[in-house]
Image (cartoon, rainbow, N blue to C red; front, side):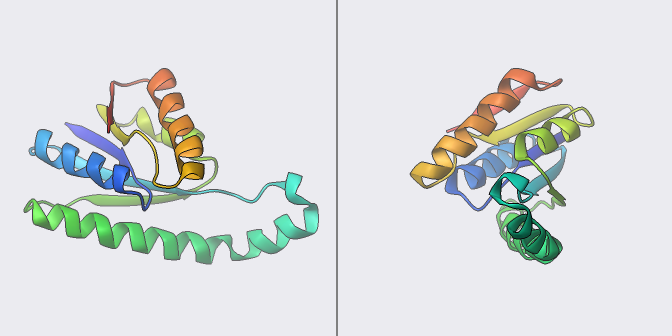
Length: 137
């Protein structure tokens, strides 16, 4: 069985990974972290300047999430693969979901803004995923 766990740096994402490790202890688990792309709605100059640093930001963010995911997996005597992508979070997760048997996702991020954005992402994944989804609270 292959399990996809979308993960950011929120407590809910960590809970989702812990749940996946507990429930799917014989599965191949991949943590997917997505770094958003700058939007041209922000203004072309700002978006281009930000895009120049996106790869660096993606690598730094990805490494931080990978490190934390590795720590959580080690606590369960397991290992996880980490996939870092750039783009719109929901779209990137849905694009990847078809390669897995199930998705385990946290219900929302930590801050109020994260709850609005990540909660919205979790809802989109739940409604549109081509595979079963477990939403962890």
